[in-house]
Image 1 (cartoon, rainbow, N blue to C red):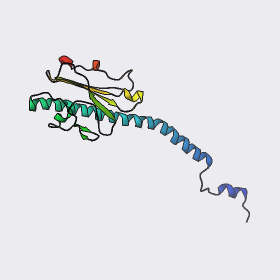
Image 2 (cartoon, one colour; image 1 turned 30 degrees about the vertical axis):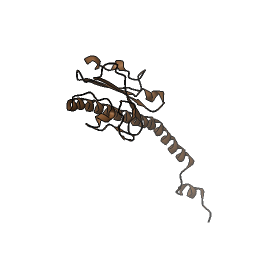
Image 3 (cartoon, one colour; image 1 turned 90 degrees about the horizontal axis):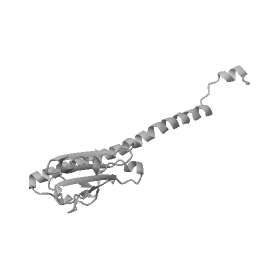
Image 4 (cartoon, rainbow, N blue to C red; image 1 turned 45 degrees about the vertical axis):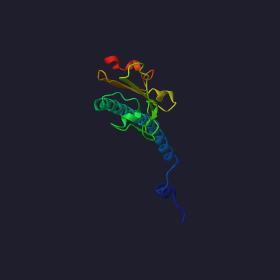
Length: 174
C-alpha cells in the first residue's frame, strides 16, 4: 500500500531530530559553564572554613592549657592533654610547633616565630595547592596568652594578596 503525502506528514515520529539533540547539548553546556565554577569555588571555601575552625580550636586549646596547667605549651603533643589537634595521621604528636597537615591534606598549619614572646602564638594555615588563586585563601590566627587578645582572618580570592601577620590585631594586646 502506497502512502499519500498527507498521510506521511500526519505519521508520528518516535525519534529525536538532530536539532533537538543539539539544542539539548547546548543547554547542558551553558548550564555547566555557569554552575561548575560556582561549585568548585564553594568546595574551596568549605575547605578554608574547615581550616578556620581548626585554628579556632587551637586558640581555645591553648587558652585552656594555660588555665589547666599554668604553663606555656612547647609543642603539639602537650595540647593533646586538653583536646586533640587532628592531622592526617591522627592527633598531632610533635614535641614542637612544627608544620602539621590538617585532615584531608588540604591545608598545612605552622606556627610563626614569636621571637622572645613565649605567650604569643600566631598560626598560618596555607592551602597545599600550588594554584596562586587558591593560595590567597590562607587563614591566620593569633592569641596573646598574656592579654587574652585573639584574632582570626581568612584570605579571599578577590584580594590582591593572601592574609599576612600585619592583618592580625592581637599582637601586644592590640
